[in-house]
Amino acid sequence: MTERVIYASVFKTMAKIKNFFLSNSAVICAAACLLLYFTFIQFISITFYDPDSYYHAAVTNFIKNSGFRYQFHWAQFSLFKDFFSDKDFLFHLLSVPFFYLSDNLVTAGKYATIFYNILFIFVYAFILRKYLSDFLAALFLLLPALSSTFIAFFSQFRSVTLSNILTLLAIYFMTNKRLVGVFIVSLLYPLAHISFFMLIPFVLICEIIRYAVNKEFSLRNLYTVLIGMLLGMFIHPNFPNNFLSLHLNGILVPFYTITKVKMDFGGEFNSPLTSFALINNFTVFFTFNFVLWMSLFVKKKWSFSTLVWLGCSNIYLALSFFSNRYWYPTHALFYVFFASYVKDILEGVEWKRVFPKVSLFIGLYLAANLITFPMNLKNVNEYIYFFTTNNMQYAKAAEWMKINIPAGETVYHASWSDSPYFICLNPKNNYLNVLDPIYMFYRYPGEFALYQDLIWGRIEKPYEALRQVFKVNYGFTRKETPLYFQIIADPKHFKIVYENNMGIIFKLI
Image 1 (cartoon, rainbow, N blue to C red):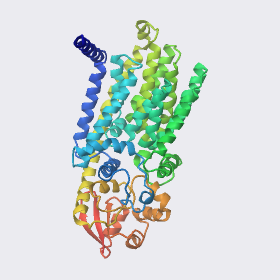
Image 2 (image 1 turned 60 degrees about the vertical axis):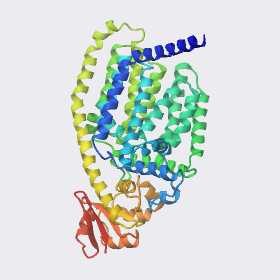
Image 3 (image 1 turned 90 degrees about the horizontal axis):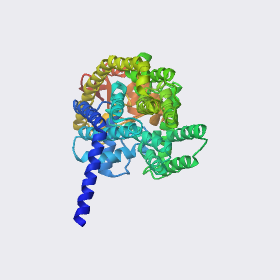
């Protein structure tokens, strides 16, 4: 009797698995294609595709070797030196197992990136299937891959992908009042990414719309978010320094970006040219217009979930016009809104009668995306080529430093974006600052002003500033900087000890 029960249970489980695969076959095929595509992108190059990925690989390796708490001495003129906070702690912690698979930190980081790609695809597909049939969900799953902006961020070893995963789950749980899910996401988000405070406007949007549609306001949703976030901040291993990081990265950086304060932030913080934003994110723009066109021909009331996804996605869509980095979360949120909208217009409608009216718009939508896809593919190829060639030059410079510069020396670097490469590939030396320049500006404003003047060649005697203020014997600068020309014009005080196509390593005589 017991054996029959066991066999029956096994057969029942196998039947459920079979039904799952049959009912989601198109989504599974689309997900597999996406994963193969992004795996190919990862391993077509031996480098990462941005500077920050090297920093994240380094910090993940520090956790692996030293545990959660260590002195971040690699940034001598930064807030990190005395008040370090790992604002991407959960991302680094989840990545640690992959750093046991390879001694090469870049290769290990690529393994971890694929892991986050899989997590995102799974969560995104899971939510799409709540609104769409298998076939339509598979098509929607592919939409983000039509954007070179999305592909670029999705291919980087950075916590922004984990942030997108948590954002999608948070809004889905909030919409459906899944309080356990809301609490878990709210608890984990402060450990994963500095943008966790966005959960507050998300839950407020959700509940305001719920009240407008259903005359109901779930205070428990709001309380759960606040309690989870606060608990997550207090259990952070770098508490209370993480509160300071929130102030700097979560408040000051976006404020300075929008108000155009000149602090030489990364290119992703700049507002993109209209033509660039249109081509690289064409599907978002065209989808928005498609919804407007469809609304003229298909008169259907928008559901609560559709309005919530629209409200949340519009926050990032608005921010995208000030900073290019916000296009990345915009894509996933906006396509879920589109999926929920399509569900609305399909419910209770004889599609055969509606289709002739909207077939022209559907045809234009598909044709327009096919036209812009080659442009985006070209941008992806150029992006991969640029960072592969650029980062290989950094890797060679770091290797020279590792062999030839004595351990413990502080090495000058003209740009804050130089040091992630060196901290990762040559951790035996110290540097000046890393990540956003806000960390140097806030802690050492005088030195930061001098630092900015040095790189732009505004200091008449750079040798004295380097020796007396930054107290360095070695330094690195790219050949495009005015400082480079000052150095080669002053052989009395500077000796070039290493040179490649991109930059030089110099020694102060």
